[in-house]
Length: 396
Length: 53
Image (cartoon, rainbow over all chains, first blue to last red; front, side, top):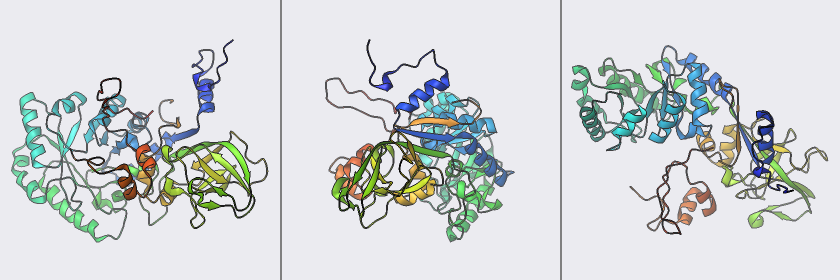
């Protein structure tokens, strides 16, 4: 009889329940990423309630901030979300497949000769340049396509968007009617800083220009902008990060629920003497006889090398058997070492999972150790983990 | 197109700006890019980006 030594080679058994098959799959994975769709929906509802009567859209770009475009878009649609923002056409196609009735905006602008793709997917470009607008108009006239487009106006970011002067130049077209513009929008520079003077400047600039786009719905706020007050909310708000549990108000407590939990497996324990070093470069030295848990996650899984610990610098912490334990030495590509000396003997065993994100370790805490922001933590989440979805309208 | 890596910009130069090592630059390359293979046994073909599993 042929013995299958690699458990991943075990086929999905029709004799087992879906749950048992899932358990078998999880038993072979080095890490498990759990996305709580109910928490995403609760966050969306909270933002919607905060912004009412403005429409609350959902930003699901970058694979829904690493959480999975299709399950997230479906869960949001089931909760009542009608408008979705993505960055690219591939992402738009994924949302269209998940939510046939969605209104989809593609933020990265319109490229020449991509009109057919917009029409095929039925999504709307967010146009931020007069050349793009001219090319889009040519496509629409040639094909009769009338799916709509947004106009992006730059109010201080100096990234994408028409200048105010350029935007004023298309007012006659708006006044003429049948203009095909379904949304006028801008993007905030420093919305997470409540007292940044640029917030008020952008608000004033956008309010003036949006008011002359008569009859066109207006949108200014991202996640943080929603919390700057009702005057920032206009007709539509566009939360992204806050849906996924990133704190939109970093100067205060996080009003959002955590969404992502990340666990990885202990693959080995080892006991080392005082004075021995751990990991590449030998940057971390044991100051006492030390017990290490070697965990199967590393920077190739999106656990940044910046979270490493050395003799001079504390690194990130992970939760082992309910207790916070510090990372020891450099994060490797596929592995990290954790100092579990202070745990009771046998509190954790080989094969147990430890928590890298969750159980009180927030996206924002991890971002601090990674030297970045929660957005980058989420969009860097690795592809090697098994992904498990909790809640939502459908079972995943 | 502009070049982010190549034409003299090395993996190690990028790693310096990222505050890390070349290994992490490579393992962090995004999934949204079209991937093109040059050379090798087969003829290189452009693949659409693969959605994360």
